[in-house]
Length: 69
Image 1 (cartoon, rainbow, N blue to C red):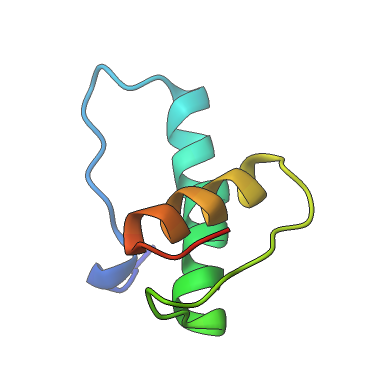
Image 2 (image 1 turned 180 degrees about the horizontal axis):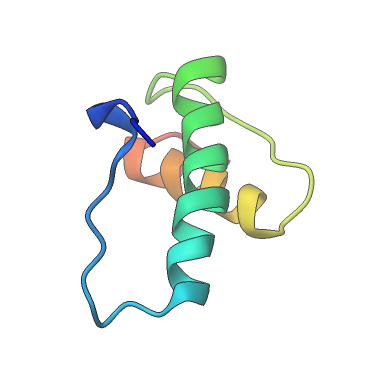
């Protein structure tokens, strides 16, 4: 298959398939949704409903941006 280089993430050999799957799905979905759909600023507040992998990734991304939740 041919994929866009922006869609490729290097995964080191010592990362298990389970961890790679969580990073490749939940983290990109939750963090990407927050960054590109919600686009919060540091002074904004966000509310996340559901604390599965996607919800937790959204919260982690918000905290990294300095957004309150």
